[in-house]
Image (tube, rainbow over the protein chains, first blue to last red):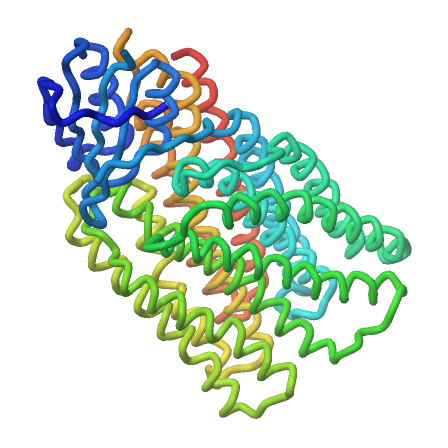
Length: 83
Length: 421
């Protein structure tokens, strides 16, 4: 399901910091932003936790995503449309 | 480096909700037992009515809520999936029937043998059907750097131990066999596994994770969390061994001390991170945490106080079961229920239409009213026990029933609010 992103591909990356939002507002913000994504766009969401429920919705809606744990309270989640 | 995830969805909403709607009914029942049998309850912990009261709370409320929460927490907190999740509906049915049989057995002594056998079989089937899939899912996920997963694993192992020692009692009361060890020793081990291992460990483990998420606090800290788990683990294993080999008071103190320090570290750290939270609003769920945490270490000090055995037992029961465990599980319930309803009924609409927030589904005003009632329960119960005044204890029983009834109504009304959308 999750594809590797080629470093040579050019993407417009929107950074979305949801670390100071209460549950479930991070999910709302991220999914609303995801609805606006074009084929060459991606979202880099900064999250306090690994949002497992969000992942299942992203999968259902046909998005790809990957996560990178930077620290105990910083997870970087990259989201893009399935081509 | 980025890594991909493949996850199953959360369980259908009816699974956790059926546990959460049944638990307050047992809570109401606990209050009624306290009201009608207050004399017996403050008299001795060995009275059958007292055992009925404690099990109505521990199995009917605590275990019911915790099992329902487990099915929700595995996918949401841990990122795992529970195999054979449909079995959970049987878990709920068998646990409800088994707990009822157990309670009836204590009040209808002429049928105690058959009711105890029924209770033993039903509760065992329920817990096996719960434990096997949950244990599989907990050991399938990576626990590295995630103390919550370790705590959850520990708690399900402790539940297994609690069940085994509980069956010893059930078999004895049913006339199937005699205790292979002394009743006091077996009770001590049953209680440590059940209260500290199953209930305490799960609350601590979940606390490591959810406080940061719900209240935007600084992280708990994995290193400190690991120390706390080790300290509690040492006592949960060490104390029963000391009890089993009839160790003296000094050895009991030594084996229980690390766990006590663990609870102090946990409570003080939680107070500290809550004080530094970014979300400044104070809702009822946070008050339940504040209130409950204070009782955690204090409850463990009570058995060492120079007061009568009866008072120690009743105060410990109040402080640990109601002050600490019921308080925190109530607070958690008020967070979990709106989330479940929101997730299943509104998350698919995000980006397409406006969706309500969690606080719209379970308004804080309602949970706050129940919190106030719960405080009055604790004050009246404490006064009743200390002043040895039965009518005050009975009053606390009535209030306890009302408090649990409010929990039920609050959950039920959030279902209706979510229905309307």
